[in-house]
Length: 580
Image 1 (cartoon, helix red, strand yellow):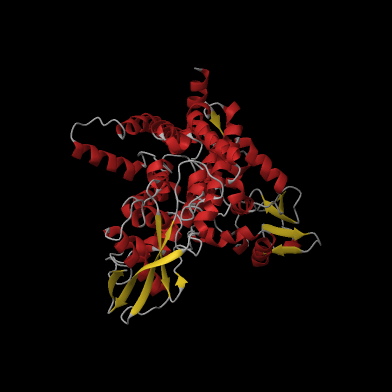
Image 2 (spheres, rainbow, N blue to C red):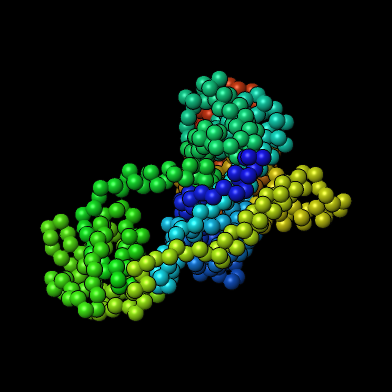
């Protein structure tokens, strides 16, 4: 009961949520940039030749701008809603290219709408401070419920791990034999690292497999208790960095690692900031505490001066007193280490030079969140007397919103548990209804089954196909049979498990469709004219997929020779596939 009370009612600093917001959105922005770069593959009926209508390029660029706004924390609540709508339109609909990280994006982007990720380290928090200052209030950053940290971890990590190990790994001969990491890493089309030396350590590689299973089983029960969070955090981030190093799904590895940031003690971020940026002051800004615009300017600069390069000192002026003539009558001026004084536009340039992030001041000015005191000779505000005695702002609207959003998160917690049961044990009798409900859950909330790297993915996977043009491999699979530049994340899953899959045969439509689409995409990217006759060579490498540990398997699969099995001929922008 004490643990439940702590989770429901304890208030802590929102800094960790803001760090998570920035890190997660940076990873997500990178994913959207990749979607933009490969949008013809994702959405065109035939890349470049039969394009998607209407053109979605402008919408994807707009989406990137929205994510940048989320990183900065500007109009955060609105941006999270719009971002979720874009997620439903572009990610949940990319069925042929969906992979496990897409499900994480759907669930997390939905939860972002209700999380107070804007409470600190954001433009929104700064705007709130300025707004309160103009009303004579001192805005005190509110604390947030621990729910906002723990529910995303439960949904995005805990449920995923538990579902994966209970319903799949514990019934998998491959995982039960300790081969869950060894076998995928021994197949060249799956791994990006030639770590045969590690794979040859039988007991060590089996230990990592069993550790993964054990970790996934206990995580959902232990992460609630802060005594276990540090070891869980270290193991979890270590496993996901291992995914980044070993497999071509970097956004999955880094994206899940950002969720682990929610398990970092919130005090760590303030201590880290203090140690990294202390004793760096090389410039002093003097501001008039009785001038509301001078105070606003000081507050904005201090918020953007993340490296703590600037020191702030108050000066006292009144309407009847004369200002220091050396500062040219400005109510805000600065002094460097050489006692040189700066005011007005010279001060602005010096501030940006000393603390580069302050260039956002110009951007902020366009958003009308402050009036630049450097442009005014005499701007003593009539309300300045209110600034002498601040009153802490008790934001009742924020408290009400917090109660509502916390209630929604608690409800989503229970709904997610029921939904995870639904995808395995349907509550509906009709199969058609079950399929519709399951599809709705995965598209909108990322709730689905999690059979990741299971026996069925590898059994019967004896052939891998590649494409060559003028004796050079297209950047799908390289000479070793490992993923090239084109295959990462969604494109890797598409090529490896939907185009070139277990038990693949020449007659399957998926292999033909994939060869045509990727060759068309590559040709247009490399200015190869498909209206003229262009001939691509289809090659195949035979690989072995044993379910018993053996030494040197990865190297043996890499050494397996490529053989020509057919030609793909383009002429008049029409493909013709000829198998030998």
